[in-house]
Length: 307
Length: 266
Image 1 (cartoon, each protein chain N blue to C red):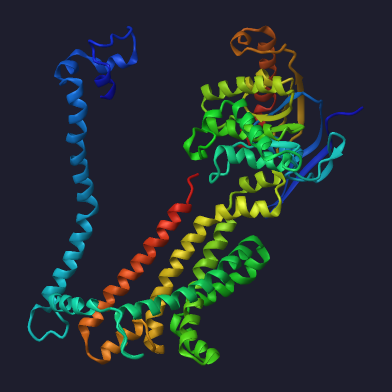
Image 2: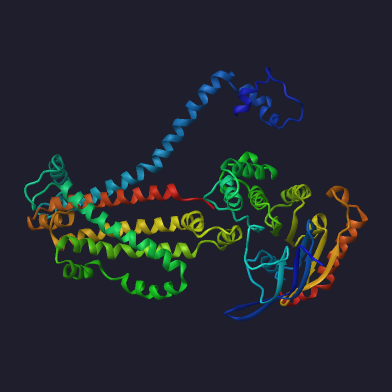
């Protein structure tokens, strides 16, 4: 297309047997407008059509899905006497709630923004500690077969334990609600990182390690240039799963421990029988979880490599 | 008498969960400096195992391997390996892949600029000067293999060990890389030990062809000296009586004398 435009038949006669000649059959030439007009017209005619189809496929289905959810919710709550608030009532309550998310009237009455931030802080601390312990542990478990065999039954035993079962242990040890919640997040979000990092280390291709052996690289270079980049995608998968778990766990833990936090806020609003706020909280928890997930996926994409 | 590579009575027995597997028995082989030797045999005959022994990636069960009068105890940059599947690190560019090797060998004695110059020179040598900053997934299989060769050559190894370096490539690309390898080896006077299963490749490139019997417990069946003068031209050689004779010898060994075992084990 482009070559046909730039090599106008009258301007540039080409030698016989040129491959590009195939594009320049007389019929096509005659059907074409002058070169200048075509170069301007072609992108303008093509691009919007493509953009529409992209928009159609990426934006419309999620919007439709969301509309379906709200529609079902609306239908279910349309009848009078339903204890669950309608979408419209919830939306009105949300507008009021988000008008001032950062107010503070004492420890038990704070804006939703503060509650979310407090929860995120606990998640950050608990998850950060889990990453600091879990990732190196994963490397050790993956690199040394004996330790791997030693630790893997323990992991299999502890991994399926419900987060809330760990909470009393935390309360017993730390004698305080906040560290107990962080402890619960730590113990629940550590496993995916240990397991995925260990798997990543075990799956480093033998070829890469042979390259390291032939080059006789120092242990430091082996770790920084070969092991770490090879394991990174696995590790980030573990981190992503862990953050998801941590965010799941915090809501449950805060319901039991109290204090400022989105989980406690849900429980508090239940005690106030403010169901609209509970529904808003469900959306907020979902959106924050989604945002965390997307953030980590973006990081993972940044550090992934193609074989 | 001193040989550059000297293999004396090497045995290789693998102990696996299913039991012991006797891969190589009684290997005696001497390679002189600047010689191009190919190892050829049916698949599973242990030719890659023998190459790994010379590389030091595996240790023999019995016997001694010497390189330049020193026992081969571990892999090292003086015996560079070109792997069958290129084995470039996918998170590094072509330049960085080669630089990693160059740094290891020359960082102690040379400046940063010299290391970079060496890296670029090695990539130029294999005709990859245009793709210095591409990642392996952005270039073709033939190009990856060239970078693998550049990485090996850049270390200025005493011996270049190649494990079916062109096995995964199409016939045309393979022929071009073989021609380039011939030129490079003529220029650098490298000692090369190469594993192949391609008879034409073996005859075209080698000074000597080491033909291996079928496994298990494979050993060297016959060694053929290829006295075709260099530089060699593949088109001219096609009708050269000496070339045809060498080719016939290898085919005869592989298919007449070693062919029947293959049918038994298959």
